[in-house]
Image (tube, rainbow, N blue to C red; front, side):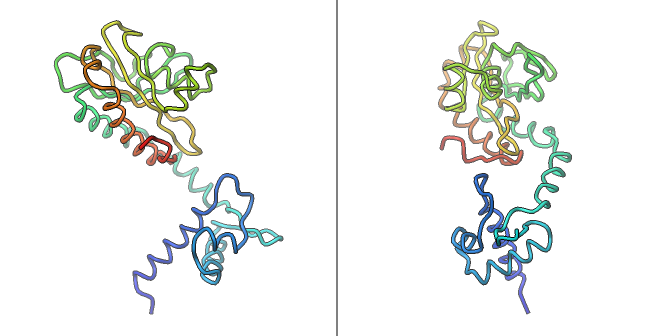
Length: 235
């Protein structure tokens, strides 16, 4: 009789098969699935048959395995059920507690940027932004990130897309500064800008690299929760 551990191992192996597919694949043979997963062909065959039965895989007339409709259905369910309020405020609280500066999550709102979530710094002196505020999209670190990942052309935006970060000092307000990085969702679509901001004299004193280290770590986690690929961020 199979043990619980046997059942867990079978699930792990089945999920490994689904993970073997990439965006460049039009279909995989059983031999290629076996090679990519490290599974014996006999094991891969049993698992692909089960995955096909439940709609996670389909096999065409040429013998190539392709993803079935079930993952798309689950992805649609995820998108309907997912709410940023379920996870973003918690991450912002953690960032504000670590850096002791305000943390915000901005999204695009037409030709403006909207502060969707905000946690203020645990200090008496801080920059003044509230949830629901609409700010210029062409001023400030989060605005630059939003424009860059909305396809804005230009060398500076190419650099933001390459480095996954932007910083600003005194752009929107001469006394404030900010550091921001993107968060991604399903299909690696841009979801929003994770941002730390505060008085310019304090942000100047705190190395941008130190802030980015914290932002990248939390952006990885949000991207993972949003359904994106967290491995894109610098180590």
